[in-house]
Image 1: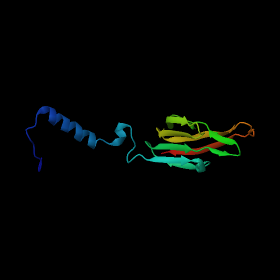
Image 2: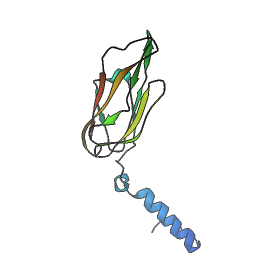
Image 3: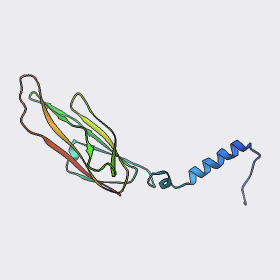
Image 4: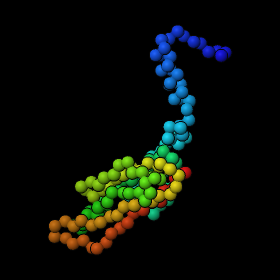
Length: 142
C-alpha cells in the first residue's frame, strides 16, 4: 500500500486496531441502525391530531402535562403505540401530578399511532364531568 506505515505493535494491539477500523467502516444499517443520525422527535399536548415522519432508529418522545382548574385535575394515561413492531415503547410513565411521558423507538418501516387519554380526577368536594379526551399522533416510519 502506498503511503501506509506499519509499526511493530504487539498482536493484541494490532487486532484491536483492526476491530476499531472495521467497526468504523461498517455501514450503520448493518448494526440495526438506519443510516444517518437518529433524531429525537418531541411531542407535547399541542401535537394532538398531528402526523409526523420518522426515520428508522429515531426516538419519539411524548411529554404530556396535566392541567388543574376549578378543583379538577386532568390526568393522562401512559402513551402507547398501535403497532409495537413499527414503534416500540422503551419507556413510559405517569406522574402523580397527572402528566405522562413515553419514548417510542422507530423499529421498522410502517405507520403507527401513538395514543393516550386524558381523564378527570376531582379534588375533595368536586365532581368530574363524564368526559375522556383522546390524544393521537400518527407516525410514519420510513
